Image (cartoon, rainbow, N blue to C red):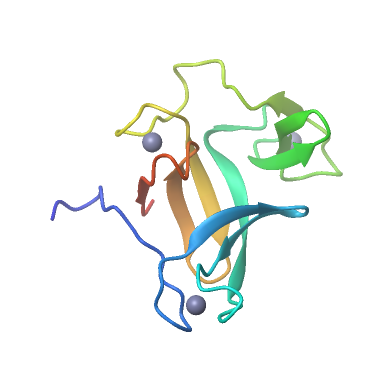
Length: 128
Ligand SMILES: [Zn+2]
Ligand SMILES: [Zn+2]
Ligand SMILES: [Zn+2]
């Protein structure tokens, strides 16, 4: 296997099943597909891999609003910068499989992972 471009499958630490990314009322999370037998979940924060806040330099975090998803400065509420999810283009890192925006998915257990924004249609993941 080539290094650097590893396709990852996150395994449930309880039963070994492949975790799936879900969107809940409070944001995205990894969940075990064997729910309700296995109730393992893991919160995940999603960041924009390739752009940072132009005001303070912090990572932009994906948030869910009434009118759809948007990026907001991770330094919120100190910094209230927000940005549309669809990026201005070339500055963004793209999924090598489908060309969609690549996101940083940060969870307590698995740390930083780069993943395709078209998940679950495209399951491209790799380590930073
Ligand atoms: Zn499980
Ligand atoms: Zn900011
Ligand atoms: Zn992709």
